Amino acid sequence: MKFFTKNHQEYITQLFSKIEDFYGDTLVSLVVYGSYAREENKFDSDIDLFIVIKTDKTRRERIREFVKEIESPLLNLSLKLYDDNISSEISTLILTEKESLCFNPLYLDMVTKRIILFDRDNFMENLLMKYKNLMNECKTRKEKCGSFEYFVLNNKKILEGIKVG
Image (cartoon, rainbow, N blue to C red; front, side, top):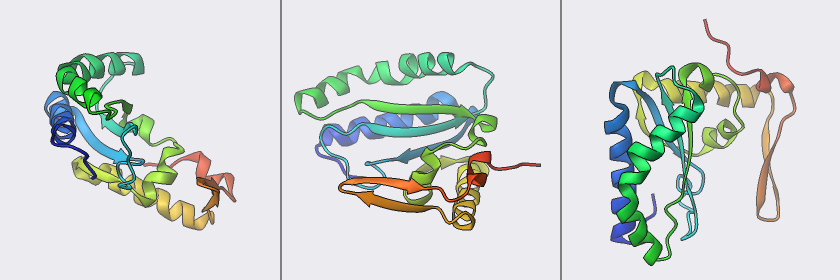
């Protein structure tokens, strides 16, 4: 992962630590994807996080909880990053294990580049491996148009998600 300043590194380190501490035994997986995972992050890049937890809470409750318990306590460090012209914006998707089994377009990118920081029983690694195999079977490919990359899905089967059980 690429850091621009000591404050930036401290912010990211504390963010990950707070996530692991707050969710504790309910944390299934914590994955960084996007520009930070590819080490292409810039000063204005957001931090893309994919979190899988064991919970019955609604998505709205999960986001509120994340902001209150994880983002808000990091406000002082976030302000230091702001002074350094570094974004501290966090783009977070918090799913349950069941929700994560449904196809998510983010998986297309995560299959090729991700940083798995926590993965109870290899849940996310196994899920992404299944998607990688399915992408190969469906001949999914990445194409470029200028600086923009996109995936070509040659078979709708990938959209059905991973079957379990």
